[in-house]
Structure formats: structure tokens, C-alpha cells
Length: 331
Picture (tube, rainbow, N blue to C red):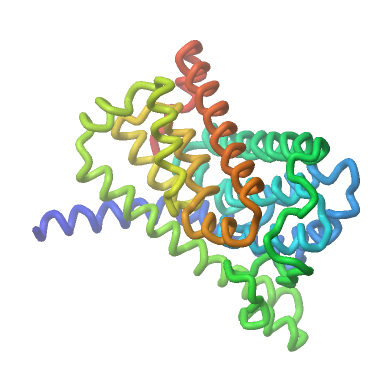
């Protein structure tokens, strides 16, 4: 027992030591974005982008450090304020998939090729969601009652609110410092500390789960059941990922160990995309606040986009050895 704990401790320490530079880089970029409120300024102007609203939502979603539980209140606030459903749904889908911290940690855990593939996947999913929703909206699919079950404007004030619709932005340490008139350097340090606490716990959880998986899940089991990139396995992992409460940082850390154990690359991409956007806590809020047709559209887009990306990726990996080699990564 002692030897087992010692081995796990050494493995965990090594993983955390290696991931630290990438973690700090992601936190620094996220702190700059939050200090200067870049994504908030763009979000507040989303309704005025006109024909460019969907590309703007994709861009905001990529730089916005929000998980699914944080992006749903933002979505409710936007659509209740009159922002069209297409860009709002785009932002809802893409925000949990990509952030500066998520990109840098994925680059370390899985390699630059995986990080860039994840970025491309997020951009594709955002454009796919926006385009499909725009066409459905233009053809009257959602009807006259609107998007939400509630009426009136819901204001959550800022995009870094927690998952509840009741705003507690003012309770955050960095915002209290801002109200007292502290300058940008102090606010940057406060935002960086808040991001370290918020993303650090998910990073630690992901690393711990990854170390345990690599230690205790038989390699033969993963390779035997999910080592083949078949359509069935991609579908199985996609459906399995839907209810998981896994954010993008935790997913990357877990996926590193699963790939080491023999998980095929198509199902791996399905896990990397599918897990962050459809967790049960976030979806329960969406079910409570939105009409069934909107929720069904969101889920259908998530599943269809994930399957399309994962199956295409697996086809390219099988067809072109150079592509497969590009995504072989060892730390």
C-alpha cells in the first residue's frame, strides 16, 4: 500500500511539474482578457454586429474563459435582451470548448497538434451551430413564443458570473478591488489568482484521474474495446460523453492517459469535444429556462458536429500515416 501511494505521488508530482509552465501561461492570457474586459466588450456589442454576429460570437467564445455552467446564464441574458438565437447559441456551444488556459494545457498534455485540432474543432462547431440555427430561425422553426420559458430581460451583469442566474459578480475579490479604484496591475494579479483557483482545481482533478486511469485501467481493456476507430466506437464515446461533468481542462488531462492506454484517435476527439459542452448540471439549467425545441436543437447540433468531426478525423488518421504520426505525442 505504501509503495502504491508513493508511486502515485511521484507520478502526480511529475505531471504537475511538467504542466505548470503551460498552466501559468494560460492563466496569464486569461487574466489579461478579464482585466481589460475584452470579451465582455465584444459580448455587449453582439447584437449590433448584424451579418457578422455569428463570426463575432465564435471569436468571443474562443477567448472567453467560461465553462458550460457559466455560459448558460450568459446565453439566457443575451436572448432575453433581444440578441438573435443563432449567435447566442453559437456562444453557448463554443465557450466551454476553448479558452486560453484550455489551449495551453491541451498543448502540453496532448501536444500542439491536438491543441490546434481542438481549436479548429471549436471554430467549426461554432460556425456549424450558428449556421444551422440561423437557417432554422429564418424558416420559423422556433415559432413565435420565443426562446425562453420566462419573460422579461434577465441581466447577469458580467460574463464571469457563476452558474446561477442571480448575479454575485460584486462578491468577487477582483471586482471589489476594481470598485475601490485599484489600477490595472493590481486587478491583473487578482484576476490571475481567481483564474488559478478556478482552473487549478479542474487541472488537479484531471491529472489525478489521469494518473489513476493510467495506473489501474488495464491497457488491454481500452485497446480491446475502444482501440478501433470504428463508427460504432466513435458513436459510443460521443453518447457516453454527453452527461459527463468534464470541462475542457479536465478532459485533456484524462485523455492523455486514455490515449496512452490505447484509445483510438477518433473516439478521443469525440471525448475532447463532447464532454465539455453537455454536462448534466448545465443541461438541467438549459431545460429549466428554455423551450424544448431550443434544447433539442442544441443537443442535436452538439451530437451531429461531434460525430462529423470525430469520424472525419479517424478517416484521415487511417488513410494518411503522416496524419496519424502528427498526433502521436509523448511528454
